[in-house]
Length: 144
Image (cartoon, rainbow, N blue to C red; front, side):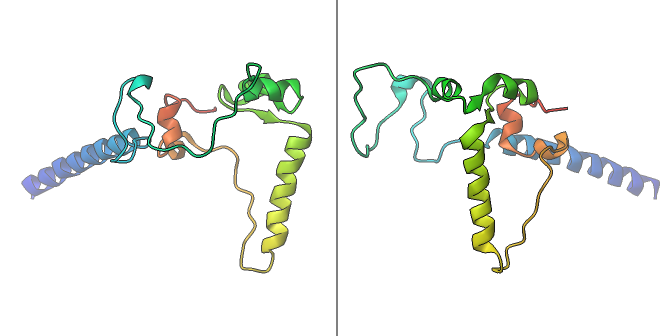
């Protein structure tokens, strides 16, 4: 019985190890391209397959959307950085209002159709987040 108990313990440890390895492999593959996308290591390696429309031509250098949004008073990137770190924005004024209006429209349009309105938590435990692409993308950093 002791040998059987030891074998079960070793097998459980091996299964846990394999499960952890599988989880890591699945997380690493979260942003891989489709099989038909050419692999390249630099911008010059990208292949244009097709194009829709004609890219606009300007007689000025267009500003990035974050600069336009900050100047218009609808994005607050410094506040977002204090809250969550880089790559997020705090939406203000009419942008925030339009987001709320869109959500309200959805709720009204789907009332009585079997849709159940919920308000989930805005934060998640690190263990839950580790199962998504964002964990790898942001180097495993979480809001604490």
